[in-house]
Length: 127
Length: 127
DNA sequence: ACGAATTGTGTTATGTTATTACATATGCTA
DNA sequence: TAGCATATGTAATAACATAACACAATTCGT
Ligand SMILES: [Zn+2]
Ligand SMILES: [Zn+2]
Ligand SMILES: [Zn+2]
Ligand SMILES: [Zn+2]
Image 1 (cartoon, chains in turn green, cyan, yellow, brown):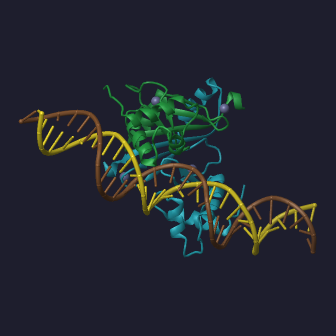
Image 2: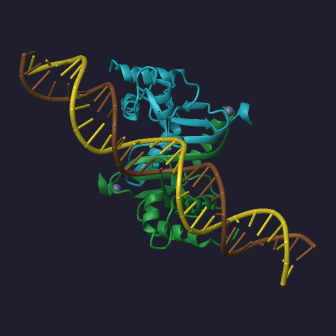
Image 3: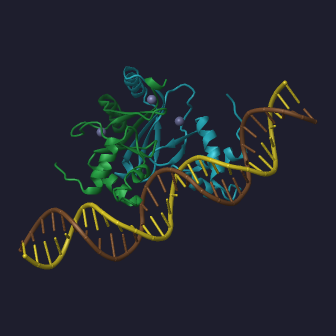
């Protein structure tokens, strides 16, 4: 599943790789204006592709995006902790949680296509 | 912890109680224009209060709001399944999931103040 | 190598969600 | 009844996201 990214996709991916914290689409647009990106659709289209490839994740509670911290080739979904003070995000893959939620879904006749888990709080440095 | 709601808060709560599906702030504004609500802050302020009282929940992945399906006086957080076809939302309280995530947080020096869990997919009627 | 189909780009405009700011009003309580 | 905290009404603006359209680049079968 090797994919060659286009110029805009690579620019957005690189910007997210450099970033220490989640970036909104408009943060990215500002960051990449010098590289020639001028309008929101250019950012959102690149993000759509990167999300599809799971190279990037969207944090729903922030309307922002982070680089993926690992490969997703097998695992189920990811969960994220988000420090509200420093912005630091950690990604993890709680397999047992996936199992429990899958169990709930099965019992309740629900077919989950995607799952969001986000913990907001403080990391130890910001307590 | 008895609280008397104000007029606007009660109007918004009632509108969400009547609704079969999650409502955005602007849906609610349209719904309540005849009752005298005219501008977004009136809705958002009422929602803020209702969220604080946990009479209402925000669905982060929809930017929308639902009435709480039960009391929260003790339980930890809630999780939600959201049918992308019919909009139906179910709220549940997966205690074991809460425990697992709490365990992860403890091990990783993170203090979670709030947790979002949202499953998106299809309910059985929409499969 | 050619043409068609698919995918990506650049741009303008618009739609949707949420907040700031400020003036006024209401209700509680010292 | 004065003072304080909370709520309201309103206009303006900020922040996030998509629609629509013309054109360019890439892929793919022939
Ligand atoms: Zn990831
Ligand atoms: Zn921190
Ligand atoms: Zn609830
Ligand atoms: Zn359904």
